[in-house]
Image (cartoon, rainbow, N blue to C red; front, side, top):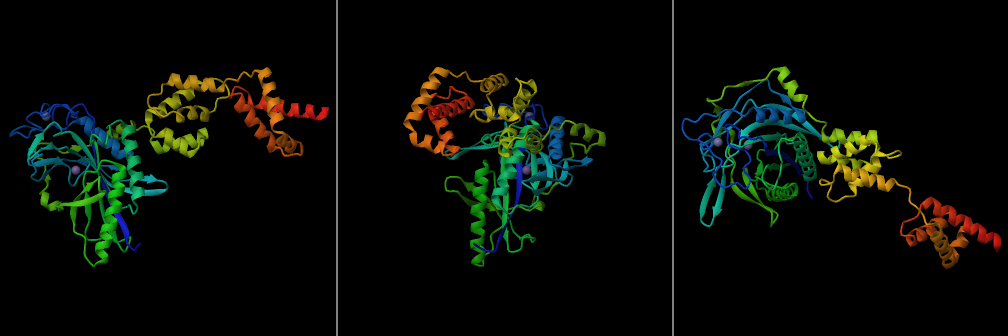
Length: 439
Ligand code: ZN
Ligand code: MN
């Protein structure tokens, strides 16, 4: 369509499923709770209330940084990000500015490397509810621990973005640090998009699309933006630096506000929370909690168990399903069972997450049992089949080996699968030979 290359970066917010909020004792699980029942002076931003960081949230954010191949900072701190919005009771958000928990990571997707700029920790805001002409505020979400992941503008294709996000989503679930449920808003996606004639040159503007809650919508929003921006540039108009929303019904984006610059937030160090220092041993201890990650699992399934890549991918997407596969693998259900046999039982089920280890075991056993063939019925069906397919029988006699498989198919169908395929082939061949000898 044109010589422009899309240049795309991502900002992803993930709510952590700690028991309590980021800086107070209120429960962090806020979904579908009665509004404003899980608040205290700290998360309501009342004067004099002092925030105390949640150690688990800090450890989990570091764990995620490690899973994303980041360097963990030995010194880190919280900062105040000042802006006025009614869902922010203090008038600032406690976030991290120049010393994020970790930096400089990457994720490899299908042989391509996408760099991660930083991973930091902050607090979520309250929630605005628009009812008719009124706006109501629910502070249950205010102060819930939120990890922000920022990538480098390394993406040039909306499909790569989608795959990256799917991988990140899977990793977060593997770590068990968040439900990452997009419909509940516990994982929120913000692509920033511009287009350039030179792939190595960042344009002097970017458009950020806010709070998208599905991978498909992100792809659509990017495709729409790329087209819109190219059309503007080809009319010699420069796209505005701004924040846009995504309309999922129309599959379009719409202007919301012009984008703030970092200096607009007047960041300064949070005076109520001392800086954090992490010793090497502390970081190593967190590192030792890293599980085998999905991509490593996928490769192991292919290399060690000889699974097809697509099957290994499907199995490794959900850590619970993968664990069940590996549990059954260890049980040694019976001899001559291959990993692929177990994988197939799981992959053939629609609802894999509710499948139990016991069910998988039984199904594998059942499939591996030798089928009892009723030889009397088989003989009858073979005779019938030979009689009604004389041409195929002739073909076989002339040396066309394939013809026998056609007959096997008919017999197996008539036997409703209750016959051993090898036995059917043997019986068919010997029957044809016998008839041959007679004629
Ligand atoms: Zn609170
Ligand atoms: Mn943020």
